[in-house]
Length: 95
Length: 493
Image (cartoon, rainbow over all chains, first blue to last red; front, side, top):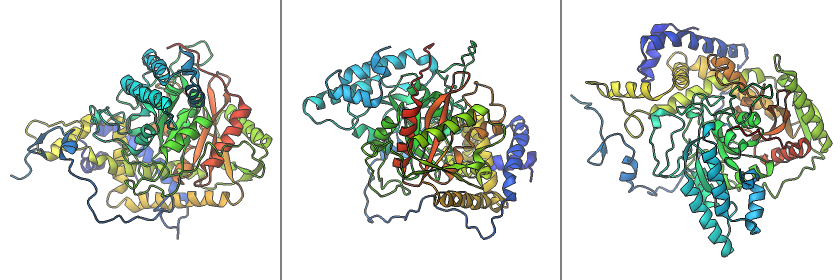
């Protein structure tokens, strides 16, 4: 499978990356090179093989259903590019 | 330079405890070395005051006999560990100026063990790179030069390039690194130092800027195997804040060190003899085999049949996880915000990310987004996760016949800056020997083996069974003792 400029533009849109036409054009052969290379995995017979889900066997833990953190609003907002009235501020979303 | 900066962590600990020198003298010596080493570009932030503060606490603790395991030892911390009040940017413009209000578990563990912090260490942006050239702060210069009389600037490797350069040049006795697909081991090999990636889950990932969460592991880099054992003991441990943290006691790796390898079987995987690798790489590997035999180990030939598929598997899984992890950089909660005139929220996301990420990070986000997108997910991502199962199975089969696996760390010595940046695939091949152990979550270590004909360090790589860091460290120590590697880069900085 290979990608063309329109598909790369679509992927950039999915990834929320504003790429210029020159960047898109540069990326088409780069991505095709990498995708062509990873396609060698098609040679491997994986019939009946389960995809790996945990690299080291481990059980998901449950914790006590109690609040053990919080009360740190100012810490969380400390690095926000724009914080107002104790919230993260963003451009208007609802018209 | 002060003699103190030539010492290992072990020697500093002995000297400090024995009253030969104070912790403040150690911190001052390294603070001065950090300043004198600025042309290496190893540090992105210097925190001499934090090193001194910890040193003064250590000196006080010595008078009251309340010393901690790392009292008096100043360390460098890779820039992707969140450190309270100190820039933690993962080598990226998108996090410029980010000062966490919290401390990563691993750096917090080191501080709780008495260690001080010299500063934050340069790295490839979001740890995506093998040469430290993708950093927003510019590349790190290796302290090493070829002995050909030229003055070519070399890479210290990556992504933990600042970490490797700092230890190698004596700008820190030990440092933290992280390893997703070789980012501790390859730079350690390129700079003639030791580094270990423990079993996945040994070190908490909490507070470490995420790259590929199923692969990321923190580990120490230092001058000796014993120093690595000392640091890893302080770094590791169960952390309820990381869902994949292993809930088991931390072994006493330092106390467990032995170089008696009688009864141990060391596997040599035939698939790691690959075409196009310089003969010197295979020669140092053969030398490593002889050293382990000398230490009493029995050498057996093994096969890891899916080795050649490890890199392409990695370059699906790691970018896929990265594209998901890096979705958080949206200009809302931290870091950069780029707001186009009259743009909406969506335009802000896209502009912020375009302005904040570098070329390699964008490339990997694009690959990752593509392989996870509707219609391609099974063909790429699920397929890669199936091959990953087979790679893990290869190791499980091999470990029925051996206790350890010995390979070279990297397929070459350090290369020049700008030599491979134009060819992503050539850069990815650097990690051909390191990536399989990452995909299988296994402990693996690089120790210096010797110099090549150009006077550059070459590393030897050991892979152990899961949770068998001790076996890896012991074999590493056996090699260290026999290699007698005492070479240091000749000071030019």
